[in-house]
Length: 180
Image 1 (cartoon, rainbow, N blue to C red):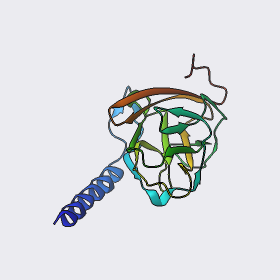
Image 2: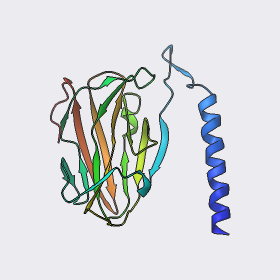
Image 3: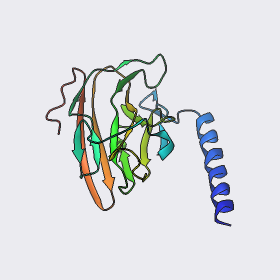
Image 4: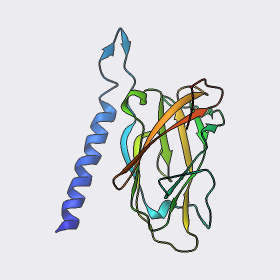
């Protein structure tokens, strides 16, 4: 019964995304068309792990998520809009940790998006599901930051259980103030 309910919910969500994608970018703001928002959310499952390692690179956040450093290389052209640039940097999550939610704050969603895992490309938020330890203590995912320009400032909110951290990333030659 639970599988049938989940299947029905996924069908409704898929239809909603399809309708949203076809309905256009929305009303004009100050005479300019508002850009289409990124896909709202994406779940990243254990099947999307690209590597398992004993120790992660990057900055460990809340003890279970290894994120890129505060300064990341400029994005490279993607050839697609709205996210014309991509700055690649993988992340890692400690095996057996609770699920991790990573979100681009709403005020920044017209400038940047994120994507980690096989199918993520320009989403507002993603949830890394809990995955068991197999070979290494950390599960690694490919991905990075999607931007409208090669450089930019990207804040991300990370939620793990009841803990929350806000991180700032300077991508390329952007002048963002202090990144943490």
